[in-house]
Image (cartoon, rainbow, N blue to C red):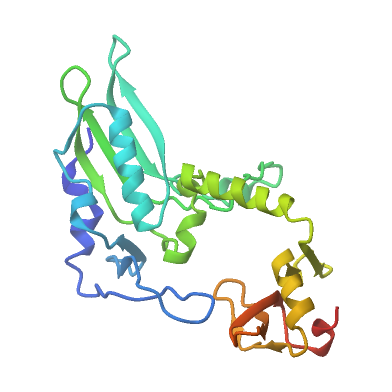
Length: 278
């Protein structure tokens, strides 16, 4: 069994170079609240420690009724802090019962460019189908059997050797890719609305890299508003979306009650004259 005295956090937190940094920047260039504290270990390597509510953080001697509950707890902790986790190795007794179990950061394990791969020209490495490369991350939750089915935490390493996902990027983590019932119903309702509105029209263009350069759309109500109140059309191209850095252009007018009505909308890569021609 591993010794709890080797906890990396216990070494790095006493280091004088511990500093809290806000390194997360959104697409507009605005800084987000950093979900971690960046420190350096005794050999000047950067280490990241999640900064979260203490109530959701695992702790030594914490007891779980079973391994599934323990994994869900660790997964929720990672989701909140901006990293994903996975089940790792285990040890069993002679009866085949699990007595030790390890949950690790999804970036644990050797990276794709190991020394064996560099030094051996005949080494054939299979490309991993993931955007999250392994980097020997030490973060780990170690559990030991305690009774019939329960397990307790005998070691918890919370330090990582990589930064975490930003708050705006957490939705793209593997653990957040499943849709809730609310979002599933929202998508279904939106698709039904699209197919039920026969007057809905849209056009878009992409560049040579298959990236969206401009998108224009108008629903049935917007087109009817344009037919009646389209003598004067106003648009404002000063707003940029915060994620894709595209210009959002609403086309609006005034009805007979002097209220604003929307005719259509557009997303533009740039404000060139060509992008305003449809």
